[in-house]
Image (cartoon, rainbow, N blue to C red; front, side, top):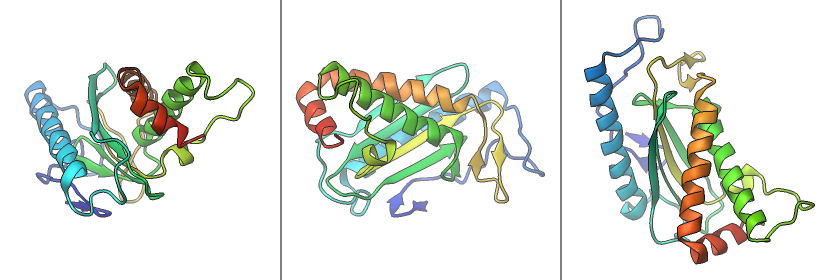
Length: 201
């Protein structure tokens, strides 16, 4: 499935939607199967971000795709991301296998988590002081290619096209996941992290 230049594999699943677009609690076996499909999709997307022509604009500023996952009571979260020297942002969201639009709660949480991780690292390394303005999420997302996928028991799809995820709990769940996991990557890759974060300041 092509999403704005990023070719994302899809099995055509539309889990979580029934006739009127209402939520459906999935049986355990189906939830486990869907979670496996989401994780396989994440691995495929990591490869696409790394190698597929047109998947990422510009030249990568760090060699490896940053990918992580988390199983939380609110949602299962899977993220793959990579920055380039471009100014274009390409972030694609999925909820229970359904492509989602900008403004979805998990995508807002993704931006919250990015900003929190970058700001915490910059303060810890004294690249910023408490008096300095924090870099905005818009600035941090420049040159970013990412896929953010969540799995929820009761997804709430909003809007005329039912393309916006509205679950309030998804936002803090994804934000915490991104903040913690990206913070761990920063700690494990100090030279790459320092060079990357300095681009946002």
